[in-house]
Amino acid sequence: MSDTIKFQCELTTTNPLAPLEFEILLNDKSVFKNEHITGLCQIMFDIEDKDDNHVLQFKMSGKTTDHTKIDDQGNIVSDAILQISNITIDEIILDQLLPNSATYEHDFNGTKNTVSEKFYGQMGCNGSVKLSFTTPFYLWLLEIM
Image (cartoon, rainbow, N blue to C red; front, side, top):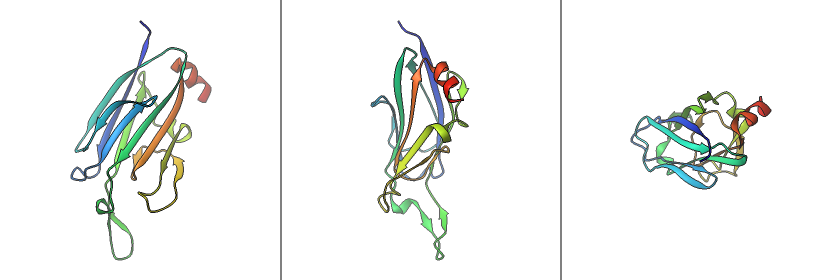
């Protein structure tokens, strides 16, 4: 039996009535899926800590133009956004490292070309966040710091 490291995060929404879907994939295998985020979700799962490459992916879907309210001047009045926070691996908080390590790809819900942006903990458009890392985890952490 190999050693494992624990992944944890918290997921919440700015609009519990909006049916936003969220899925986490680890190396293209689903490890968490919720078809309607209505409140705070605590997510945790184990990752093998052997010599390997990994891709962690957060996927949001189900957002439509009805989820965003815009006033007469074109300003967003309210929106449905997923917030992912307290992202940890082996109890090490990664939130501060993610903008330089993870990418958020989306196409503004089909209204513009696909962009790849830094990830700051919020998903406001259907798309995916990808974080590539290697294990043993602590060696990867030392390399990116």
